[in-house]
Image 1 (cartoon, rainbow, N blue to C red):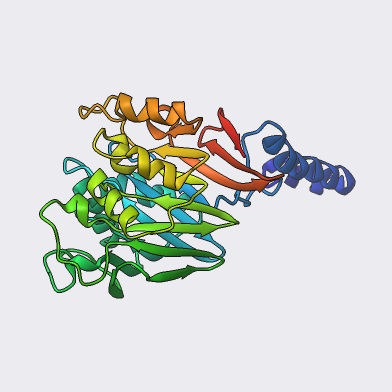
Image 2: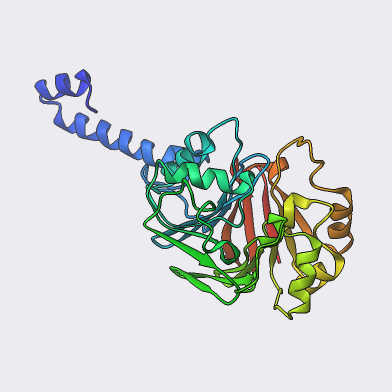
Length: 308
């Protein structure tokens, strides 16, 4: 339309043909990509809304929550030999129209969860960064992070994320930090579109049992399996109390830790729980509810799940 051909046609007073050609080009630009499945919609600038995405950050965890105009990350992955924020997180966020974050939750200081958030805070505006309440007063934990506000989360705290909500289940406020950082993890329940997602970070069975002893309501529709599917997490009693219909495991393909453990996979299978794995399918997106089913798909759209 903006080529020399249009100019020549106009010079020859072929305005009708010029308009017709322009209409065909515009229609094809809108209709063909969508009909071929390579675009999310009929408008070239449109993007498909995904309220929750479990990002592929290799051997680590990162979850993006998008609710209306509100965007948050729960952990950001991380590998000390590369900058995951530069290489993965910022390109992913910008591609999805996110140029700043309202909230980033660092469940615990392990680099495969925390480093990506710290790197991202250096190159993208983040309004609030949240850490576990057991680290409050420990300035080393928040060192290197940039945000308008630093907060500390403990059991009972509630975060409103647009139309979604995060309820913090642990650790209890006033509890001292434990030597193993995995036992200090923020555990929370995400309520979004009528679905409950239990986010367990890297908690071991000892922490799972503390939640059970405290009578915490763990019932969920989807369980983000603890510690990348490690054998030291996901106890039978904990899983029975949660009662999820599906479980998601975030780990790296061919990782050296042996995640996920065979015991965990067998236990989930025996209970009829549908297992979604980032290492096998890449980034996984919760698209919403349809006819009572949770709809998940992977980034390449070659796998889709309908989970009741």
